[in-house]
View: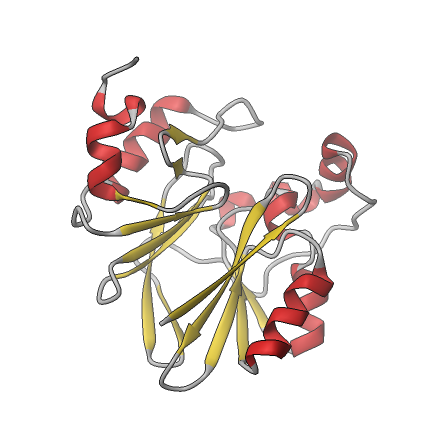
Length: 213
């Protein structure tokens, strides 16, 4: 597996291009903006895009998904159906975050907990992780020991819960039951900032370890 990280939007959101090395097939995860940056990376690595995957419906994660699905003639998969209201409210999100005007669009298919999605020969398990948003999902690849977590957890921090339908208690439960249960060496690929591991967050993340300061 090869991972190409493309920071996009003024929020430096980590759009990921996940490539199956055996087949050269790829998916684009959370394309929040800067479509030219993303397509340039696809072209330079000469990969074949199979789908767009979304962790949740915030604009900085989905902003150009509709453009890319038409560019590559592929489906948009995810997030969970409980994110539907965020897609309905894309115009409001654009105004709230200071982005260019954005019309609503919707995923081809919503995903559920324990679904699986594939890119080439790589299979990812879908885990529903509500709290930052109600329909947030993450993508876990067991053999490669990595999990793409969107805005659920970051290096030393957790996702915000002050947006509509956010819930701190629910988010902490999701992290503990869906992320911290994974092997300690599992790489956490967050939607913003640096990668980390499950083991590091167990011992150093104050929201998980309980040790502040």
